[in-house]
Length: 540
Image (cartoon, rainbow, N blue to C red):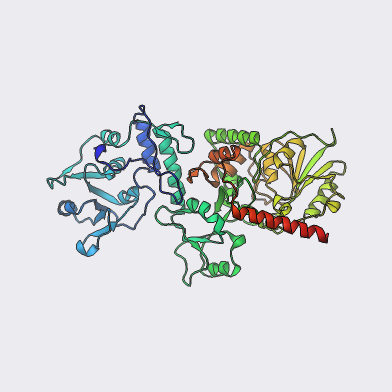
């Protein structure tokens, strides 16, 4: 039976810009077990599991061949008949029958079916048997239709290779169970995107990297330039900082649900302000993760989420990999640097972009880098304070620059060119407004004081001087924080294969410098930043 199938049952969805389209099979045995069959059922993968999900009548009879319609009419028993063909055909040719054409999600199609009529080599037969849908086989040569009574384990074993496959990200051998799990990961991502009508506010240089992470499996992701005159058909993914206010207002008038999209916490080797596209994003239907005014999906994960042993083990290992590689949101560096003041208490104060939404919302009134420095000095009058301006500010692109002569009235040293990982490793404490550097310091076991309300405040891991919402009552371990923040919440894109991937793959790419090399646009943005810095220095 498998010889008749044109494609393997397990395959890679055709994500936009993906460089791989199928698993490479390897020599060796990887037998089909009852556990594997159970996972196929649970994760609902196999066939074109990413494809369209059209509306169907309940309790229908699903037919895969027009030649089998006479048999379907005899078996229907007043059930509606759905004819699903590979190519679109006019419904007028089949009166009284619902006609569906093209690629569809077979699990969805069979979910409404009480009975299916398929040909012996059709992969729909395998999925029907997995779903315990009563199945009849239509013989195209004889025109006969008989009940499928072959043992389900034989049907499934005949459709799945008994070899292992190659991990698309590493090239290492991968068991069938691991391949099924990876397909389940892709299915959950695609299913979460099915209702999204489009995206607004996405810079052109981000779109190729974002589209695979928001793809619904059936159609290319639609980037909107303006809001249509009629309400969108579903929620709109919004990069709010770059969306035109009038467009956002129009969506709000339509009562269109808005999905907040932001850069992820492991972003890239370089700055977004330099037009380097992100390797991860966050997608939140409740609100921006940095705005404490309302709960976000990340906050709900931390407040109410369950963290099993497997997830915590992954989180602990991911934390080790990040720390060992010296990874931060934009840069890498793990060099050991000397303490400039010996045994004196050392505090790192990371600056931020003052007009950034995370500062405006999460700072709860504290937006000035200079004011943050003043408050830290008040809290620690005898400490040796190191101030690190934000990379986007140093690059000349964003607001928040404080002249060194003024910074040094409150700090002992300005450190602009030292990677954040090396600085965090050297100091005793990190004091932040809402900076992600505070989270990166927690990964490295450092004491963190927050003056605003970042997403990681209020869970028992930080000293909080800002107005943390009273709804944050759970106490979390560092690995629970990492599990929610880096494993469960963001979405990641592998820059090598172009496929959505687990967090560990992006950490490996960033550690090995496999991220894309800067192009002409990045060079032009960096030159522009240099010119801005030079002009600003002339007027200070």
